[in-house]
Image (tube, rainbow, N blue to C red; front, side, top):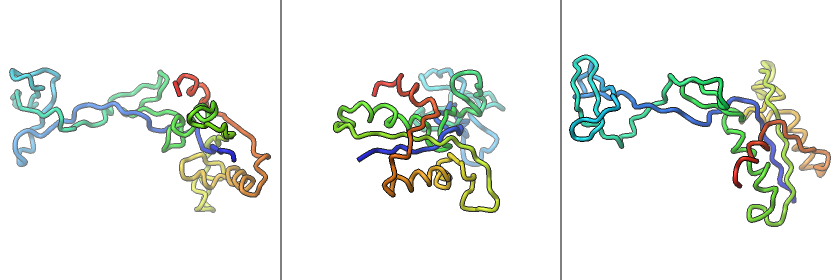
Length: 191
């Protein structure tokens, strides 16, 4: 028996979010021009205070457990380790699943034996870097024959050839290939 980890990478993938308090309607349902803006201060009762922009009224009781948060689209950061656009933090992945979720077990946890792989089953990891190129003549290959995208990878010609080799008994000709930084990520995590 052998475990094969085969997945795409090289696409910005959502991993985290920056939240802010949403503005809340104050008053009744017909009160369309009154919205509560949170000020970050507390009223006399220790509740979070908010202000109505037009009237300046304060001290509306706000339930902090209401879950009324939205993504803070004003947060941007292209300089640090993670790319942040419109309040969304992106990391390497396949467009749906972050690289750490796809590759951590294959790159580290299953390889060292122990309770997660007690018999020491061999692991082969093969990553497919996304090289999308839409093919208009083939609707089944939506992102082209070298896609690493989460679903479209099933049309990746190299992956299909590798799968055919494995199921036909020629798995020895499929070689491990890791092009991402999953090994460096895994080295910093206690697994």
